[in-house]
Length: 421
Image 1 (cartoon, rainbow, N blue to C red):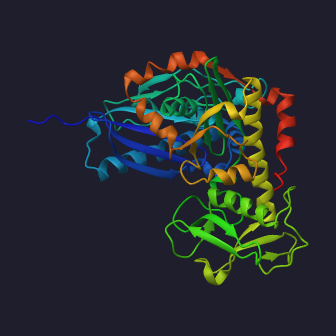
Image 2: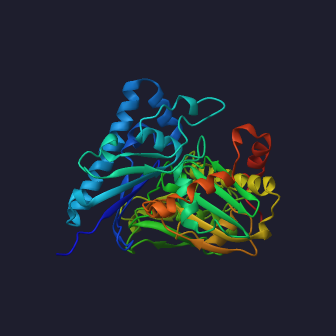
Image 3: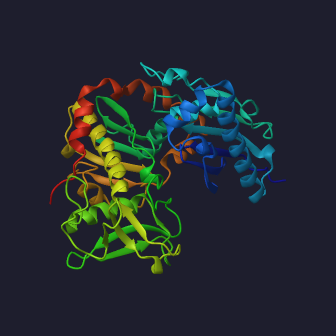
């Protein structure tokens, strides 16, 4: 009689989305994947708003804990049912996420994260029965979460570093996980420098007027005719657009700069007269697709207010990169490889990121773009042999708390303008 396969489930709890991989532990293959919106979003789309809600009362914390646990339970049950797998076949679950999402899933206090010196309540790895965290329908499974680095760098950063395969490199390499909270690690032979950028939800399609996730109907790339200022757009899945995702927004900014429609300070150029530029209301807008060409029957635009939010996000990411380079005595030309995951895992055009100044130009680096690096790393941590790599990794980390660095504020301000041509 053929033995039944054993399965593990890797979960990455992001501020915006929660990602699942169902993995066959016999051969390491990914049996299925699933993505859901984080159900806590109704109480704040960003980390700070959600934290403020949680610390108001124990009841509020319980609301957020219950929401994420119930959402994960429902998703796992759906995955197992869809693939004809009995709950008794699941032996291991790995949970990763930023520190706030980690603390809310494991019902840990957030109070110490809200005030200086911004310390995590628990940093050590967690290994408990799955039944203790709302997964009592999986009777034989353990739940593991790797260590938290510190205040806003969670166990997901460890998972991404494991997934990058950079740990034994003798060259300088950069790992970037872009999301609402962007974790950036610079690996060198002397150690690993790591910090977090509060990049906000704009790159994930939230808080911008026509923003949506990287899904069917999203504008993912934009070019602009320099003579007529007419846009040419690329849409995920083809058809008519219904919004713009993060890669599309970066592409649009790069195209607006290149065409002169946006000035280096980030303002739409009011001296240019074009039917694609609207100054009819208090908020200037560039029209990416008129209503008759969109699936919503409304103009799809990128507004001046959107550009300001995106400008702040790209400045935060660039400032963290510059800070890590300075702290590790490195230069962009010394970086041999950049591992990019998160929101822009596969869709971002690196030249667009260079054009808007989100990244310094890495002249000698190869770029590796991986979708969902954190959940892939969580999948590797289903195996004991990979968990053994975590403690030596933690010993190499040089964490930089940016709230204590005046230099970071200066770098952030310097990163806000866009590069001139």
